Amino acid sequence: MAVATLPIAPTPTIAITGDEIELLRSRLRGRLITPGDAEYDDARRVLYFTVDRRPQAIVCAADARDVAAAVNYARDHSLPLAVRSGGHSLAYLSVIDGALVVDLSEMARVSIDPEARIARVQPGTTSGDLAGPANAYGLALSTGDTHSVGMGGLTTGGGIGFMVRKYGLAIDNLLSAQVVTAAGDILTASAEEHSDLFWAIRGGGGNVGIVTEFIFRLAPVSQILGGELMLPASREVLRGYLDYAASAPDDLTTIANLIYAPPAPHVPQEHVGKLVLSILVSWTGDIAAGERALAPLRALAIPIADAVSPIPYPEIYRFTAHQAEPHAASIRMMFADELSDEALDAALSAMEQASSPFSLIQFRGLGGAMARIADDATAFAHRQRRYFVAVIGLWLDADEDAAVHEAWTAALWQTIRHEGCGVYVNFLEVEGPDRVREAYPPATYARLAAIKWRYDPRNLFRFNQNVSPAPSHSLLTFAQ
Image (cartoon, rainbow, N blue to C red; front, side, top):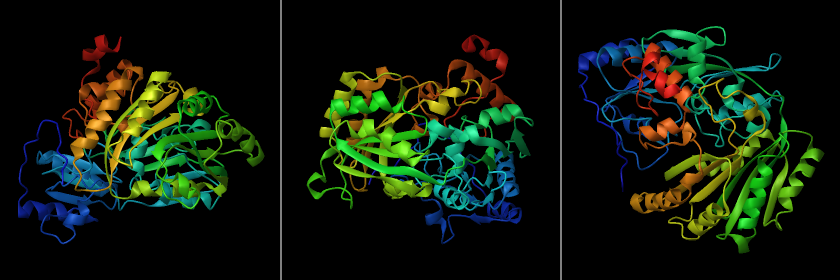
């Protein structure tokens, strides 16, 4: 099987001796896993079966002090440091050969204050872990589109979820966070404390620190009108979806996928394996008003399947549960304001020649609450973009040739990329520094680099979509 490599400059590896390992272990409340331990192979495994990395040691952190101890140890011993939350990193940066890995997956505590509508959430918590307890109080947070995505990586990248048009990004509901810096300090970041750090963790990825707790404001959402509306795939249907999705009432958030219809109880057998447009629907308002809001989508064509109904909010993750199964993927993503007929035709044509029956092309209508926050309010700055577009070559057999699927993704990407404007940092693979700059407008990039210089001048936190630290005066020209 093909094994993922990291196409960036290698980091010199310094071997950790047995005595040093024991020193680190003595400083931890959590576990330290090394290559000789029985659980090592399970601990280094991530969602993608193409990744086979061998870190020197894995710190399964129990709390912020463990994270700080690992950071201090890596810094003082000049060790490469990787951070893993849910293991969904599309760039395969959760586990690095020869590194010390800080694994946050066991830090998964959720505490709900129903009166204040606040959730305290640790970074190893997943979207599903939070959705259930919050729903018990009639509350919710707009998070990821798969139940197994870790909140650490999701939130620091922005968090475009199932309620983004009504309640904004996950970071738009972040009140404060506990952050471990490269100096090993444990800080509180909020609008009042370390506000520059607070700005940077809201969209800047893992560049400036490791978040060990989030405090979120929750929305009063218990039941939604949600599920899957499946329509025939055509340019007219795609155009109709795009025209409506970004201008619909705010309560309506949708994710549309060009896919081959899977076998599912609500999909007629005669349509299984046929190319369709699957629209995942989340309406957060009055149910009767939601039915009216869905009418324009249902009118685009005679639905192949209509599994949209009133459901508890956590039930929406049932429609994306398959995304948590081991797989491999080649992804290119862009934001866009307009998509030409030629781009839609190219997408349809590519799907007709897909290298895998599991590949897909995703379109999301944005706007709403996400767009009503100033671009410079957070490090996530692409708030005015109308559409989210992702080409996803996906396969489930580890013996398949990755190059075939990567070529399929690349071919469509080269055809449509000129219509894009920016990229979501959470949907970047390791694509080079120019693509990282596309995730941040020039002024945003300059500000993020300056904050990086303040909190991580030696770039300890570099296994991410890396922004190199730079003092602000050296970036004035670039920022203008």
